[in-house]
Amino acid sequence: MTQTLTQADLIKFDSPASRVNISWCDRSYELSYWTETGMEKENLLQKVMDLLIAYKYFIAMDQGWSDWDLEIYQGIWSKVQFKVCTENHGGKKRVIRVRCAPRMSQLATMAMFGYLLFTIVAIILGMSEIAAITVVLGMFNVGVILYQNFQLGRNLYQVIEIIAKRVYLVPIETTSHKSAPASAILQP
Image (cartoon, rainbow, N blue to C red):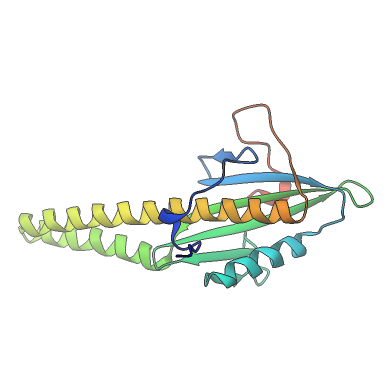
């Protein structure tokens, strides 16, 4: 039986090769790599798309007006906004920073709004049992959404690590437990 990236529960992930810098305020994580091969942002984005399309992920590319380069969807509830920044350090030396921000899909946001609205209407009409059932269903749905966002973020971390190994990117480690300072391009 073969495993796919969409079957996250079945995949045995390798131990982390590089330190993940998590920004809890932005609900994102960042990875940084060093290369002396002159790799550019577009090359890395193409490699990510090639790998994910083979596993049937839906990918939307930025048209120039968004704060992300790719939006990667898994299922109907979760997506990740993916951004890459390349810092040129002379010649072919580059620092490549990748930021992944798991988010709720538009359908998930509308569902949460619907649960809230239905609960408020049920309370106003005096149907406390219906309101309680709606709250329980909404909380269950929130749990599913959070789980899927976590799984998608974890899958994309593995995709980035696989590609980094293939193209000989060297992880940049930070000494603090705080998030590495982001470059100006990566600021929302």
